[in-house]
Length: 406
Ligand SMILES: Nc1nc2c(c(=O)[nH]1)N[C@H]1C(S)=C(S)[C@@H](COP(=O)(O)O)O[C@H]1N2
Ligand SMILES: [Mo]
Image 1 (cartoon, rainbow, N blue to C red):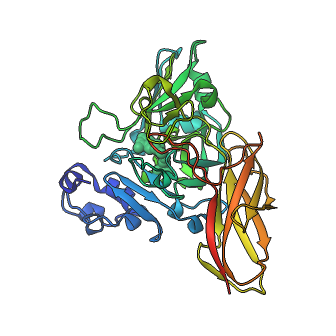
Image 2: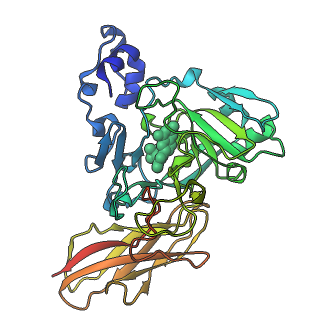
Image 3: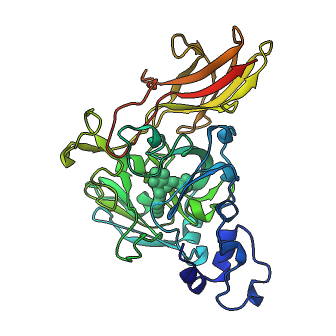
């Protein structure tokens, strides 16, 4: 964050947003004054995050959770990862915010104010899993450039908003509509106003799913600035890069959207498996759509000490992109044998599912508990790293925790 720009461009009202609370005497502060809480930004205070969250990058801000922080059934803001490709917008003014719907395949281009959107269309709330396509990247070899996410770039919060399909019906969509691309208010790290940090999208069928929202609330409150206030797309089950934050324009395209980070190796993987480290031709790369089946043990924390005469309850979540998770198993013998966990149904489509199991260990010593989920098509997580790809996406290897029985 460039402090001088910050101070000169921002109203104290906006700074209040970043602080997560109102500056009580904002009207008394000198013009252009930068509150000390923002002078040396403490990301945990700035974004209301738990201090145990891990900052991977501060330009732009990228912050992840640890497995044991994600134990809640619905992820609270303080444990939600933050992933930014550019600079968080300088000014968010919900009152004057507008959403433009345009593109080759729109019948009537329209501009809505936030208030119109909220008043005109029915509101829906869904619990939706958002996982960064690069979650798990840190394990790839040869290493992939980018934020070295371990396991914590996933969340499942409650999102409230209007259905994108209702808006699309209101503007009218032509028969040749193929994709809906987003444009947002964040700015490119280079400072070049003509460059977008990211402008991705989804095929029209995904855009028209019931659960695809243009959301204005997260967990029952206005969306925090870092997570896309005042308006964000939420496309559960897909790489979270499809869920654009700070949405100001949606374009209904008659071709695959060609915005920033839609091509090359961005959010694309080799269509067929390749040898690690290979160069892959542009035409042989495919856009990531539904995320693969995955699970996370969120209790206990890795490294837990257990008494031999006590059984251990493990908890976690599993998700499978567009699909449902069919079952979750655990192993305490490095995958030689597996036992079934109790698995809950999702609260709605595209929400993660909770699993638990009670484990009895045969004798004292070191163990690892591994979890493995299988989706409704019978596809299971790999025990170790899946197919290598240039940017290190889609690592859905089994999660493991260490347990010492004493
Ligand atoms: N406008 C905009 N939207 C964005 C991004 C971004 O940089 N700018 N990052 C995307 C990526 S890559 C991810 S993983 C998710 C992260 O959402 P979160 O920060 O709310 O967890 O936002 C997506 N939407
Ligand atoms: Mo991402």
